[in-house]
Each structure stands twice: as C-alpha cells, then as structure tokens.
Length: 119
Image (cartoon, rainbow, N blue to C red; front, side, top):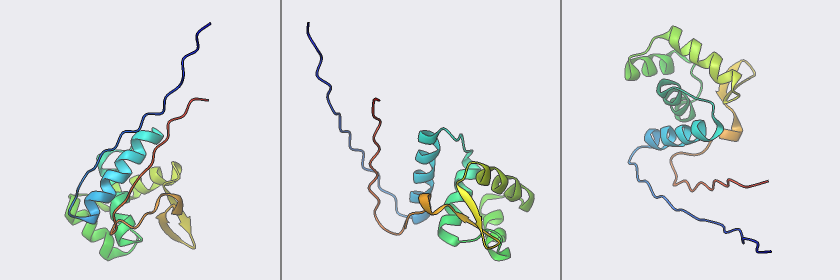
C-alpha cells in the first residue's frame, strides 16, 4: 500500500506601503478574512484608525475619523458595538481599545506567519 507524504508549502508575499494606516488596514483585512468575521471596509478602517490614534471616544479622534472617511458619529457607535461582539475591540476602564491580541506597532515592518494545518 502506497502512502502519500505530506508536504509543507511556503508562500511568501511581500507588500509595500508608505503609510502606517495603509499597513494597519491590510493587516485587519487579512485578520477579517482568516477569522471569517466579515468586517466591512469601514469597520476595517475604523479598527486601523483606532490602532494608530487610540481611543475613538475622544472627540478629536471621532471628528478626524468622520472627516477622513465621511462617516457619522452614529455609524461609529454601531461599528464599535459589532467590533466588541467579535472581540476585536474591548472595553477597559471605561475606554474602548483594540484587543491587545490584535494590536501591532504599524510604524515598523511586520512579518506575518499564517499556518493552516490539518488535524
């Protein structure tokens, strides 16, 4: 009886971005796709924005996001609720922040390793 030997396949993809916000958006897009959370483009933009600017409940951050993405404060509230449900955002000491598990320093180069394993 013949058995097939399993192979490990390595694929490298290099992407280059000039801005930290673009890198953060790519990261959270990948995270959404892999975890099957089905985040919208605007939700990904919000998470990326929060990861760089900090708490979205500061009025200056809210105003900046609304201006940058032509959004409304009410839509931010709706997105924050969904992002809390999927555990990307968490509430600590009255502030809504990125779950530390998903927070990276987007001012540096990032190398991701994604393992899709049988078993």
